[in-house]
Amino acid sequence: MNRKTHTTQQGVASKKLVAVLAAVGVMTTAAFAADLNLSKYVKLTGGSALGDATATGINATAIGNKAAANGQGAYAAGANSTATGNAALSSGSYSNANGTAAAAFGNWAQATANQTTAVGQHAKATNSSATAVGSASNASGISSAAFGTAATASGAVSTALGQGAIASGANSTATGTKARAAGLASVANGSGALASGNYAVATGSASQATGAASVAAGLQSKATGGQAVAIGRNAQASEENSVALGSNSTTAAAVGTNSATVNGVSYGGFAGTNPVATVSVGSSGSERTVTNVAAGRITADSTDAINGSQLYQVANGLQQQIINNNGDINGLKERVDDMDKDLRAGIAGATAMAFLQRPNEAGKSQVSAAVGGYRGQQAVAVGYARNSDNNKWSIKTGVGVDTQKHVNWGGSVGYQW
Image (cartoon, rainbow, N blue to C red; front, side):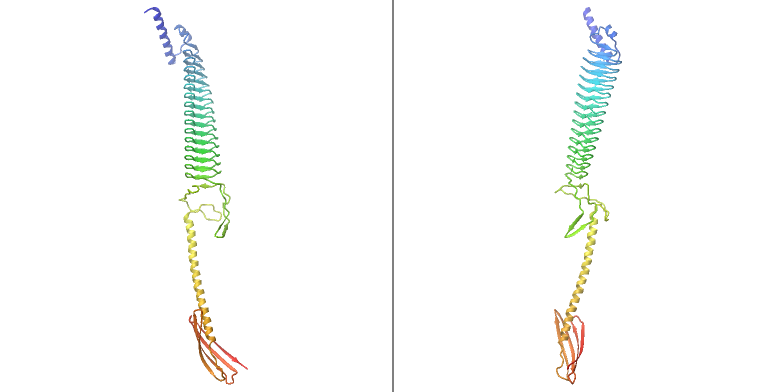
């Protein structure tokens, strides 16, 4: 082997040695590099560098073309990678960790504030204590966290989890593909879910909670009124404080009722005549019954719901009263009928008595019988009559009986001149 070949092989071997020592954390120095004739490959300033790299700071390490580690314990690995700050760590081409304990992993990853972490190609964590994990993820809010491809957490202490998820409200949470939590302390959970109202909660694919403190739970559910609640697929609570329960249920403006007229009779004095909202369990044409409802209180000021058994008892009581009244009415009718018969029989008896005869001559006596009738009732009467010898005085008596077995009688005395 000639001298030139030996020298070349020695240089290559020495270069590999430096690389191995740097990789395992054994410090190399400028003097050691000079002794090995490697100064054209390694630039060292108080740390370890491999390749056309720069390491500045105690225990700093830079590996890769134009890699730069600036800070105590800083580590930069990858072409054009940069680690600036104590304990900063960057790994990947053009990765950038700029801040104390900042960490960037992945090509073009950016962790540019203290204690930030960016993992993934083009991932960005740009505010203190922010974490971005996933390709093109972005955590720009203080203490925010973005997990997933293109996930974005821009609100302070916000969390975005899922592809394209966005948490822009402070303390907000967006979970699911393209979920969006824009309101303060809002929560969006589900693919395409939207929580834009402050303190709003939307859970379910394509659910929307846009009213302040509103809740939408279920596929395509919508709570657009303030403090409204929509539960169920496509349930929609659009009025403030309203509640829509069940799939396709919808709400409408609450209507107060202070009186009612039924069959021409008006009723009033109702309690709860000024409702602030309504609860809906269905929609027009798709109504639902509400079952297993406990008996509500029945008082003048009660606003409890009344169940079927209570209405049954009321209706049954009314029915019984009607039956009793019918009995009383029927009894009264019978009595009236009886009285009518008695009256008609009495008229028949009077008619019979009126037709009793009396003698026409002085000193004569006469016995006679007569009959009478009136509207289906009959009577018979017998009588005695006499004229005095001088034909000045006369007497007449009679007795009758009718078809109601009533007896009537009468008598008279007369004087003529």
